[in-house]
Image (cartoon, rainbow, N blue to C red; front, side, top):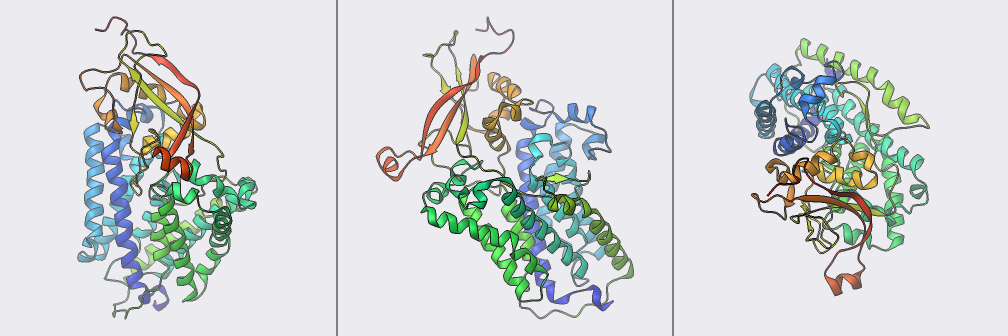
Length: 473
């Protein structure tokens, strides 16, 4: 069927597949390096405890069938290996059916991780990677030209990502309608980047322009994705530029990068398409059946998107095939941070020698400048931002975190930038305090060298110790 394929998008498919494999690689690497402290048998939210109470049908995962820390590590590193192979183009060297199976492997492995990841994997980009990854399975390899219906579905995902995010902003917080959200957002976002301080200090009129441009990109431009070329390419390019602007302004894991990957699939790169034989019948039928399934499942995201009670980042099926997205429906005006400290003193007092734990990404020492980590995702740092918003966000894991710090647990300490205590001398007490953080002014930066100024707000968790440790030497 001539209408089934779009040979002119051969290069688009190639660029899309390689960049998607790169995002997969980062996602699996994040899982491999962080899971033991977060989800392991002695993690803050252990997988064995989760699968004991949640049935397979509600959260299908390989780890429902078997779990051990070694098995999880094997799956995560296997995901890294397959993603690296796809990044190198191995799928082009195998038959079509084998290429489909090869792309199915990272999707299945990452689905297994997300479905037992609990609050650590509750972010929208997890479902987005799975939805995009499932659609990518059916794009084929060099044996066939890209199927038109799958290219359309990739644009449909991009449309829902952008348009849904635009609607949630307009409905969620009046500062988006007044064009004032960026007066606060760069300072209060979950994890600032090295340039966020400078973005915050841009002139306020420019902030208004940024917000207005964002509204145009998310509420108008997405409709142009379904127009003929070169308009669709121009629309995708504008989205890519907007996402790169966001990459510079903060650390949003791979949310911006997966959106860029989607936009690349809509770009018509200049190239002479090679002559390909017709696609096999079994492949055409499979792709059309999958496309019909995904279109049918789109009912719930569309209904949510047009609803006045629109919600962000929700999956409507346990396989995360079609989801709804959105970010920053409301913007915090004030930044709070939870600062964790420990002491070796036998009796904790206000004048004790309290030493501060340093996190890798979240603000701590006012003089330490933020670093760029995205697309790598520092999961604990992100959840600490939520914990500062309300203790209810951390009720399931914060107490265990403090316990692991009292034990000098090696896996947990690897999530941090620095522990103030030697490995053989854990703290006797730990506590948590809430501070208000604000960016310094240009003058304060020159005088103090500090990018943050912080003010004590209240006690978050009083000094606590391990049970039965009163007579510990």
